[in-house]
Image 1 (cartoon, rainbow, N blue to C red):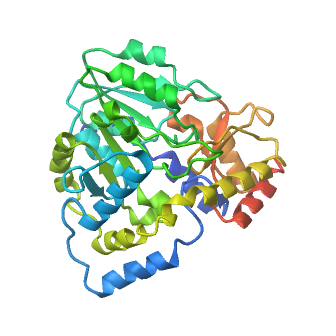
Image 2: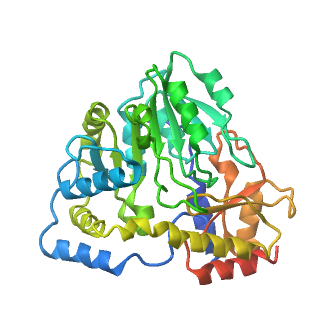
Length: 380
């Protein structure tokens, strides 16, 4: 029998490769983006409560209404943006499903989608699956700024979508007002839609402010915003996220969503809804991670790695030109084997494997984990 692959260029992800190597060599795993500490005990108790009291059957397709209300309240409080919980918010099985569904409900064969690289690894395969054509714009290293002139030159009658990610994974870059003004100018009076991946919206540092597309009416009217509770609540394994979009887009989103997962874990949704009643559970998270970022950054001064600016997310990228001329993939694997620390080579976030000699470390770890890792890294 023969099968023609729809993703012939896609193999095992770099995250799986590095995590398997970390397990094989018993290395400290700073590669994948997940915490090694527990989430809120009160949140676990809430999930337990709702499971024990019978909330174990299908949730409504769009999600528990009270959770959609909490999200709407949070969005209005933080970004002065009003979303109708009935028609403009859907709970998803994680942020990646929200991204996939946003692409699936819009992209037709031949549609062009602009993606900024280095990019989260789900964007390009998702576009490809639905016959879309990816147009990549590489961010200008080492500051990872957007060349908006290049973006303008790519725009044509086939351009259907632009995908942005702020704060950005893996660069930890956040978009600024000038970026949003360019995006407004480029999309004005066009049929171009936007996916704004804002999964790290609450993890912003050094007195910077997260700029959501929902804060800008001209962008809000054409945008899917995708987000995740996994990053916010230290519960990446629960796979609960959400999508915000104006009603005309959300109508199409839900048509696809209902045939992908239909609905998401009931008890967890009720628990998160209750948990968000205390605004401190999302307002104070940036301070929590600012402390970890600063702690890890200062530890890295003991090594020959050169940390790049980190304004958001829970990833710290480092240049290693003072250490080696090896390709980043080769060095990352060697560090696992010889020094016992796992990272992600940033070239994996480029279609062409662009190598700026940069590795990405996750600092969403216990302080003792980070200390042990840096002791090993300092030997390189």
